[in-house]
Length: 231
Image (tube, rainbow, N blue to C red; front, side, top):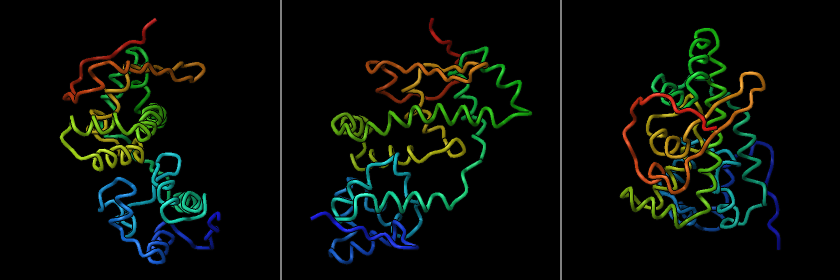
């Protein structure tokens, strides 16, 4: 029988999951095992120390829904409502992060963006957000490819659960919370270069081929200059 929706006014992801854990007599450790994530992820989510992830950028709600036999969209609806109540993160990227992302941009475009930056920070923040969105889309798909992620975890000398958490935390990142570690682990291995058309605003991103060594190893960040779009 299809589970009945438990949505009601004031319901949150935390309340809903805690309620079902109690009713089904499951523990946070058992839920973490189902999610294939460290236990502290669940305890932080249940305590309110970690905000519910964006539904389109995670696979945890589908796993929770099946395990706790919840209504199909209950968790996603709760998370969407909760996140809508908080202000969007409008912090500027760290200077080092901005420079490294611009280093992947077409040289002429990057120079033009830098010249306009003192009077228009919003333009660069918007472009970084769009570039970030491309990489996050690829990272989200990696959650469905268990074997490559397990191989990556082995290469990094970490557990599969920690590797999944690393991806999920990156998926919840905004331009203002991007770190150099995110650049090393996700953005530089994925993006060869990017550019934006000054007239149409169309963003063009060139991804590295899957066989590229950049995809399979971490490298220290260095400002090596600008990469131009081919052709």
